[in-house]
Amino acid sequence: MSAAASGQQVPLTESFEDLYRREVRPMVALATSLTGSREAGTDLAHEAMLRAYRTWSKVGALDRPGAWVRRVLINLAIDHARQRERERRALRRLEPVEAAEPSAPTSARFWAAVRALPERQRAAVALHYIDDLSIDEIAEILQVSAGTIKTSLFKARRSLAVSLKAEEVR
Amino acid sequence: METIDELGYRAARETLADAERITDVEAGLARILAGEEDVEWNADGGARRRWVVLTAAAAVVAAVTAGVVWSQQDSSPTLVPAIPPDVTPEPTTPVTPAPTATVAPTTTSVPPVDRPSPLARLAEAIGASTAIARGPREVTVYANGTTTEVATPPDVYVQTDGTFLWWDTNIGEMTPIRSTAVTLDGTIVCDVDGAIHRVRQAADGGYVASVERANEASERGGGETAIPNYAVDCESGEAQPIEPIRWTREGGSRFIQRVGDRTFTGIGDAEGNADVTNESGISINGDDYAGYHTFSADGSRVVYGDMSGQPSPHVTNVLRSRDTTTGELLWSAELEDPVGPTQWYGDRIVAQVLANGGAGPGYEAVIVLDALTGDVITTVPTSLDIAFVG
Image 1 (cartoon, rainbow over the protein chains, first blue to last red):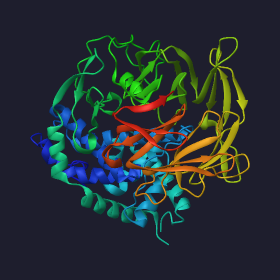
Image 2: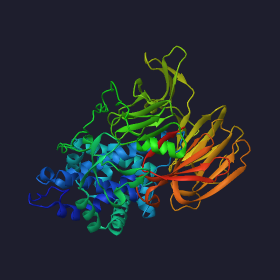
Image 3: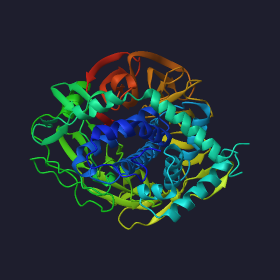
Image 4: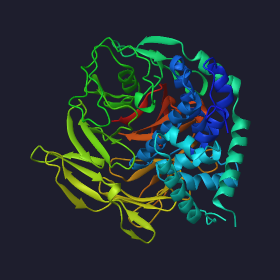
C-alpha cells in the first residue's frame, strides 16, 4: 500500500515531485483496471496528477494528498466510463470505445468483470485490491461511510463469484 | 477453485507490474512540470481564452488551414473534490454560461463571430455547407455561412443529425439519465428524462424526441434486455412507448438502425465495433471486423473501417464500401494514416485521422474520399472533432 493512500501522515513539505514519483505507477494500475485500457489509464493518472499539480499549494497541505488525487482519478474514471457508454449509444456512428489491453489473462478477465459492477462497487474493489486499502481508507476516498463500503465489497464479491465462477470466500 | 480475493490480488499484482513496466515516471513528471505554460490564443477571431499547452500524449496540437489549434485543458470543477480549482480567466467576449448537469440551460449560444472560424475554413476546404464540431464545453456550428458557438455542460458527448444537437447528463450515480436537445442556434427544444436518440419537429410545430430509458429496463428474453423506448412530447413530457431499438446482451448489444427506407440490425461488441446485417440477414460488412459505419442518404451503400488484423480494434488504415442490398464489395481504400470516425456527406466521405497514429487522444487531420470510388480527394490538417458535415 502506498504511504499517501494509507493513513500515514505525509509531511507538509513533501514536494509534488515526491508524490508523483511515489504514486503515479499505482495510479496508472488503478486507472487501467477501471478503464480496461493502458492508454486511458495512463492518461487519466496523468490528468489527475496534473490537477494536483495545478492546486498543489492546497493539495500539498492536505494530510493525505494521495487520497485526494485518487478521488480525482476515480471521478475521472467514472466519467470516462460514462463517456464510453454515451458513445456506445451513438448508434448512428457506431463509434468504438477504448480497447481492453489485458496485461495478462487473469487481470484481463478479473477487471472486465469488475467493470461490469455498479460504479461504487467497481471503485471499491479496485482500491481494495490494487492499493490494498482498508475499508476506512476506501470510505475516505469515496466519501461514503465504512458501512457502505462493506456492503459494496460484499455485493461486489458475490457478483464477481458468479461472473468469474469463483468462490466468494473459502 | 480460486477465491475472489485470490483472483483479485493476483490481478492486482499483474496490473501493477504492467504499470511499472509501461510508466516512465521521470518523463511523465517532466511533462506535467512543463505543461503549465499558459498560452493565449485568439481562438475564433475574437474570443480570447486561456489555453494550456500539453505535450506528448496529452496534447492535441495541429496546424489548421490558417492557424494553430491547441487543445483546451479541461479542469471541470465537478471532478475535483474538496478544494476549489484555480480561477481561470474568462473569455473577453461574452459567452453564455454553460448549463450545469443539474439545471436545464435557458440559452446556450453566443453571437456568430465576424471572421472565418477554423471550422468555417475546414468546411470550405472539404466542400461542406454545414459542419459541426465538438469542444470540451461547447459545440461549434458552421451553417449558412456563419459560425455559432453553442455552450454545453462540460464533458458531455454531443450528438447531432445536422438539425438538432443533443446530449445526456448523468446527474449522479444510480440517477436516471436526462437529455437536452437544442437547435443549431442553441435554442432548447427538449429537456427530458432518458437518452435522446432522435428529435423531430411535428407538423404542429412542437417537438418530439425518441428517448431510451435504460433505468427502466427489466424484461429479459433470449439473453437480451430490451431498453425501453418512448416517443416523448417535449412540451408536455408525455411519453408514449414505442418499439425498442437496442437490447443489451452479454459482451455487447443488438441494435436497429434505420437509414432512409432501410433497416439494419447490428450486433455490437464491447469494443464498439459491429457486424451489421440488412433486412435479409446479409452482412453489409462481409467477414470484416468493422466499425465506424456510415451510410449513403438512402442507405443503399455503406462505408466502414476494417479493423481486421489491425493493432487496435479502434484504428484502421482500411476503409471499405459495400452495397447494402447484396453485400458486394464496391471499393477498398488503404490510407497512409490511421483513421477513426467517418461521415458520409453528399458524394463524399470524410474520415478523421487519429492523432499520433492513433496513440494519442484527438485528431490531427481529415481525409476526404470520393464515396463512389474511394479515391482520396484531399487531406486537411485539423484537430477539430467533427460531429457532422453536410
